[in-house]
Image 1 (cartoon, one colour):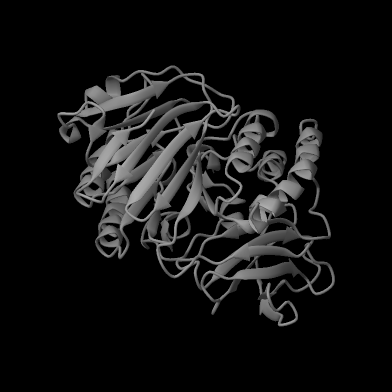
Image 2 (cartoon, rainbow, N blue to C red):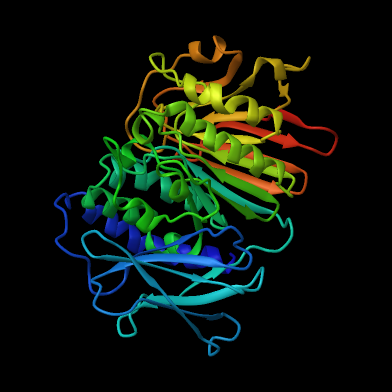
Amino acid sequence: MSPLAARRAFALFGSTLLALTAVAATAPAATAATDPERVILTPTADPATSQTLTWRSDGSGDPVLQIAPAADPDRVDTVEGADTASVNGTFHAATATGLTPGTDYRYRVGDGTSFSPWRVFTTASSGADPFTFLYFGDIQNGISTGGATMVRAALAAEPDAELAVHAGDLINTADSESEWTEWFDAIGPEAAGTMNHITAPGNHEYSLLSLSRYWTAQFPGAGNGPTGGRHLPETVYHTDYQGVRFVVLNSNYRNAAPLSTRSWLDTQQRWLADTLESNPHEWTVVTFHHPVFSNSPSRDNRPLRDAWLDTLEEHGVDLVLQGHDHSYARGNLTANRTDDPAVQTGTVYTVAVTGTKMYDVSDGNWTSNGAEARVQIADTPTFQAVEVDGDRLVYTARTADGTVVDAFTIDKSDGKRVTDTL
């Protein structure tokens, strides 16, 4: 068992007890605890050399991050943090820079008197070393029961996963203190504090036209997104991790830009095109909440499809990871079929759900817009593990009991072939 896996296994029992307690904890807390809580790693543009931590406290002292190489724990550097928001306590953020790639770092956060436990994270390597990441759809409903079960099954199945991608609707009510508490309990303090979390906002992270007060306090982004659009600088960004460029977009055109949808989406499209054009890596993964091809019979996100689909295809994006439709699907443009029915080329589009709310499925929105749903499953929450190793990417979707419901491989050793493997 790797050191990372061992740390997470040790924390799993305690976090399970927290989740059971959280089922009954529905009332918002008046203030945060004195000791730092909700400590989470959020990615910078280059997690090989820098790392951002966010956390919450009662705000009684000056926030600091203490960090040292795990191999030399006495060489502690202190990084000054900043207060970022006041929501049932004070949120803080601190970014360590000048880190060495592929290195274990021991850290804690606090105010100089009260500190979080020491934990260890590993910076990304400077090259395209193999790694695994997890992908979760909407956790949103039944967080402390269904969502927590799925997250813990994922962490148990993939104990060496180095980061997690969350495709929106982490919670159901944007500013619910109790639901955010359940979300952090579901993830668990060990996984929150030792692996990077790439998060895209969903419509439930909005209250009418307002982004959750918790969002940027907890997930500040990498700071390299587009400017000039409402909520774009803090919710749109990219981060590079061991040969993969991860790109986060904000698909909430009904909430963030109801009166200027096309302009708002076009701003992201131009930034996306530049970001994909400048990608130095072999792989590209894009995540946002609303699917370009809806899995639900009554839904259609035509403004997204009109604004972004051509850019995703023309720049050869490998995976587009989405949520929102509370079911599972995986598909591609029909133009990307081959003579072999098990093989496609081009971009793969997925929809997934992790929580307990489920919708019916239909492939009508796929087929009427030049696409096909190769796999479509209703009433089935899943987690996804994606292994990236050189010119191969292996994707597996599982239920909590380990049943594989979808699997495929993208092989770039000779062109690009996406092969069904289930």
